[in-house]
Image 1 (cartoon, one colour):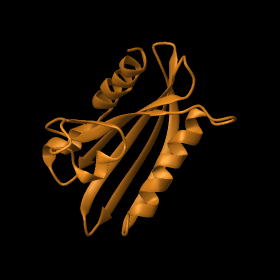
Image 2 (cartoon, rainbow, N blue to C red):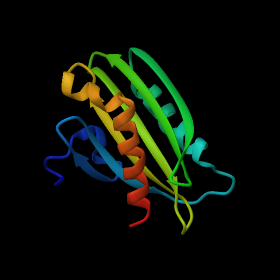
Image 3 (spheres, rainbow, N blue to C red):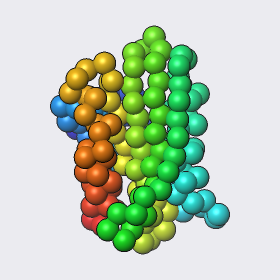
Length: 134
């Protein structure tokens, strides 16, 4: 996406992308001593918690995908800006650090609700691995 068409919510986080269902970004997280993928997942959802001025819920997990671990942080927020669901897929880089692949959707639209379904999560986890292997 060009800077002009990039939503403000993702503009400062990295290279933005957009589909009919969601928007998101891909960002390199530099290596830091003692920081693990679950720590990165916790940090990004903690930022979501600060930004949400209404109902908020979050979690984190790790999953094995094609012999690689994909860490996932997720949050939902419903406030005066609307209802949204954010997911962050974090993969370790061979050069150190992590690649963070995000998916943010407005949960009020039927099309956007599909990003929370398990078959879509499989696609997003694999996309995160593709990004890190590029």
